[in-house]
Amino acid sequence: MDAVRQTIAAEGPRGLYKGMGAPLATVAAFNAVLFSVRGQLEGILRSQPGAPLTVNQQVVCGAGAGVTVSILACPTELIKCRLQAQSALADSGAAGVAVKYGGPMDVARHVLRSEGGVRGLFKGLFPTMAREVPGNAAMFGVCEALKQYLAGGQDTSGLGRGSLIVAGGLAGGSFWLSVYPTDVIKSVIQVDDYKNPKFSGSIDAYRKILASEGVKGLYRGFGPAMARSVPANAACFLAYEVTRSSLG
Image 1 (cartoon, rainbow, N blue to C red):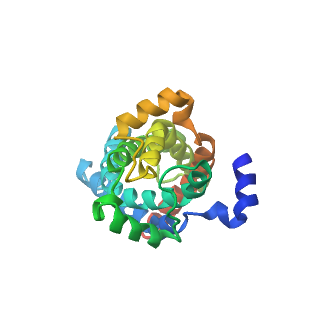
Image 2: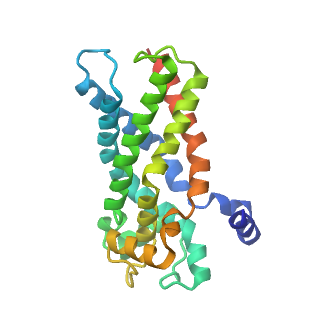
């Protein structure tokens, strides 16, 4: 709440939506890739067309989809994190914050020009993949387990919207429960100064956060992440299932 108050006082309500352009522009593509790859893997793992999958098979599908979406997520996350963190970094007097980004395209141009070209946009790809693969494995596995529990068996086609919302929301929460420290490491690497980096890599970032802030540092921002994830994924899974059903 202190973060909300200070952000509104310094930047107005608009400050709460800083960095939204990049994820908003790619969220449709991100979810299209995520659910499409998962659907293709479901087809491969099915013993016969239309056969329901086990929870373990859904875990495998989620992990496979996580590998693919990491490629799309990494540059998007980098742009979002740079925009969201620049005011805080400037206030703390961190090195390299003389550059002020005017928006998502400005971040992309700066990175391409000054931070190694296209490779710079994929800074933090390893921790992004380390987040997306186990996170999506957990999310789709938990979602399927809850759907089967609520349906009383493997046939979940008769579940109502309320059950889909519950399963999707709790599945989204399981994503962050399983990988949140990895997301923190990814974020600090992506906002790290290119010319004077504080961290040499993911393991170094993990050690330094642990040494300076303890385990608590690896869960900084966990509450807001969960508050966002549960309703967002409840809506996402509901929209997916309703759309899929309406398309036959």
